[in-house]
Length: 244
Image (cartoon, rainbow, N blue to C red):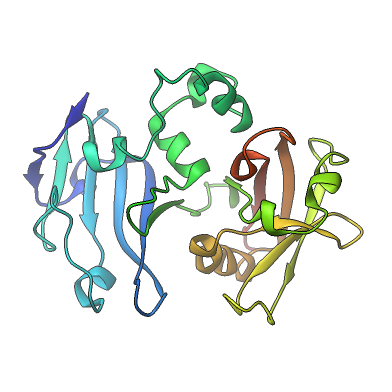
């Protein structure tokens, strides 16, 4: 079910959250990424959305049409249209191949929230993306997935991708001289040669996770050399944040 008219409640925490994604907005002027909202799948099957304090203080940010009040929480029976429109239509002929590239092989993970988490939900018409909530489970483990960015711009990446096996460990390497983003992180094979980039909108959350982890690894979960460039490399993050 899709809805354009969510009802309002005091807080989504009053209901209980099963899964959460954060909405990241890039200021078109400053290029700064700001966490402006949280999309929650609630334990009763409904969906909630609320803005963050950063959204209320962010320069040039304006509330979304479907969620006009920065100070209210919203709950709807179905996934709000703003987020549905960030998913590929299941009617498209290429949808099965799309799921395969995303490593979605079973019905239990074929959910809107998982699709949004793995793809980031990009649209050409705005600067919003979604990132996983990298909060640890009770054992201190964090597991998440993302698609490598910029694969088409890395010289020699196609040949290197063809040699990567699922389950192979990858490395992250800072690229401070990157002309677009000095915080850029390359995704590299064991030899140190790059195959892509960590998405810019994920960098802040990933750096925070690395800083609080005892162990942190990036693994090639799905490699699709013949797919569209943005679907060629699905990475899995595994981190241990438990206290020793």
